[in-house]
Every structure is written in structure tokens, then in C-alpha cells.
Image 1: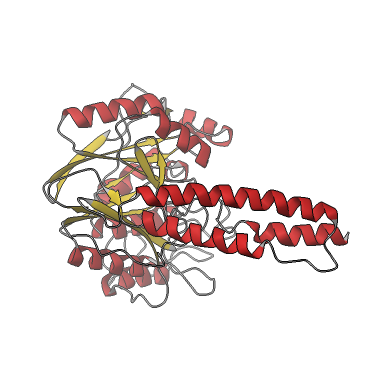
Image 2: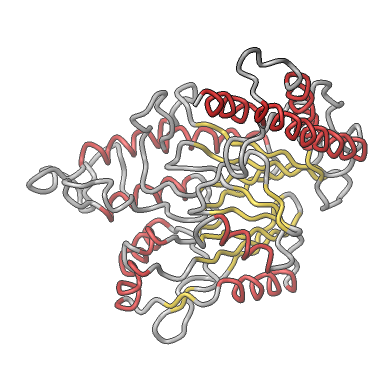
Length: 412
């Protein structure tokens, strides 16, 4: 028993590097390289998995909220030459049990979420299963009322027609950027509802390939995919199978990718969840080049290398009276693994330039914490929604045609 406890303690501290998709490795270098040249800046703001959350969570500290997000979007517009704002799905509707026991105000909430997105200048949105669970008639009403820019390359209706535009081609800081989205086929739980609504989800890989081909043929220099296909492994398989994508914003995967994950020639982004964070990818174009170096890569590798060297130093310390032979064998094996990792990381660091030259990117996951002030306009809209939210027995008396209280809140 004692040996098991000690072995567990060693293993717990043996490798500080987090699992892929979780909190990430240190991003600061012990000796910071000189800052790269700033070029024309495109800020790609991204979100997904909002799940109908419009106010800060009941957590400590309370994170999230549409009004705080609007403040960060406005800051980006003041700082960058161009801003693209995208969402990879599960935006408009909460999980089925989120409002258990409360009257249904699904359409009013969806309009609030969609209005906040479009006021923030949403460039493209691809629906997830929670958005489609609203039903096509409601989703279309909300999109029409709020001018929500829905894209989907693989969702079709009963007559074989596309349900939404397949993609968008926009210009940002002189660069033509193509955006498209794909959604997963329905789960068994959703299949009957999709059949009743005559929604067909065609193969997302085939649809993604066709979307990339079309966008490139029409002049897209950068292609951004909004991918809502399920678990991380499913997302990775799709991205690996489709050439020509530069950036992928994931929905549903539940990852928080401080460091974009590289799959083939693409890099994946995700900022989970329920609106607690907003992702911001800054692309700096220097000299017109569209091959972007990762400003943070050298710092990440240097941080991991320093941590592994620290672990190797600590691994030679005696364990005192709790040092049975089995643990000695484990420690010897662990030291070999650490040394191999140190050799790999040292070689990689030696190949990386001391300073970034040419075009480069920087990715951040921005927490919507209480230090971020509310955008006044969005705060009023949320307040109006909350005041007029249905209670047991129906809508509040005196609410407008859309369920919002009349007056300062405006219409959704």
C-alpha cells in the first residue's frame, strides 16, 4: 500500500505537460525574444458551445455574459485593421435540462443570442445540434429577424436544396478570406426529429472538400472552416482528410486550445464553453506573406524544456525510507524518458529562429471575467429579456409582441 501511494505521488508530478485539448503548457519563454514586426492585423474572434448562456455563470468568479463579450469585440475592432467574428455552433439553445421546470421561451432567447451576435458583427455561424433542435421554422425566423449569417456546406432540405448558404467570401485588410461550415449527421436521439423536419446532413468530409475547392477557385487566400462534428477525434479525422484549410474553429469538441492544434496543414481553435471565454487569433501580415509563424512556439518549447530539466534534477533526490526496489526501477525509466524528451525539445528549439520574421500569428483565450465592463447597449438588452422572461402562468403583462418589455430594451 505504501509503495502504491509513493508511486502515485511520483507519477502525479512526473509530467507537467497537460493533455491535448486541456489547459496548456507555459507560453512564456525564460528569455523573451524581441517582438516581431507588426503588420496589417486581422483579428479572428471565435466562439462555440455558448448553449444559450446570455449572463455570467453562477460560478466563482462569475464568468461570461453577452455584455462582456461585446466589450471585447469592440476592443478588437479598435485595435485591428479588420475583424472577423465566427461561431461554430450550439449558440442559440441551452442543453435540454438547462431550464428544467421553467416555461419555454426558446425563440425569445434565441433572438437575444442572435441579436447580440449580429450586433457584434458576426461574419459566419454554422449550426450545431442544439441550434437545429429549435426546428427549422424557428431557426429561419430568428435568422431572418436578426440577419444571422448562417453557413452550412452539408445541410440540405427535402427537395435536395441547401438549407443555408454553403460559404462566405469576405475581404479583410486586403485579404480574401473564405469561410464555410459543416455539421455532424444526427445522433440516434436526434434522428427522428431530423427525419420529421426533412433535414439531411450529407457527408461532412465531402462537403468540406467541395467548399475548399470552390472558395479557392473564387480567390480565397485564407480558408476558415467552422466544424461541428462531435468529439475531438472526429474533428481531427475530418481536418486531416481535407486539404486546403488554414484555420478550423471547432464546436462541440469541448477543447480549450490556448495553443492551436496542428492537424495536417491546418490549425484548430476552440474556446470552451457556455460563453465563459472568447477566442482571439491575431494574424499579422508582414510583407504580404500568408505563411504565418507562431509567435508563441519558441516560448512554449522553452517552457516545456525548462520544466523537464527541473523534473530530471528532482528525480535523483532520494526517497528516504519509502524507496523500495520497484520505485527505483520506475525512477530509472522515468529519467530515461525525461532525457529523451529534453534531447528532442533541445533539438527543436535549436531549429527555431531566435526572432519571428515575416507574417505571424498569436492566439489567446480571453476569459470574460468580472474585470471586463459590460457593454451598455447589450446590458440593457439582456436586462429587458430577463425582466420579460416568462414565469409560471405565462408572459409578464405589458410585454411587447416578442415578449420583451417595451421601452429602452428595443426589439429582438
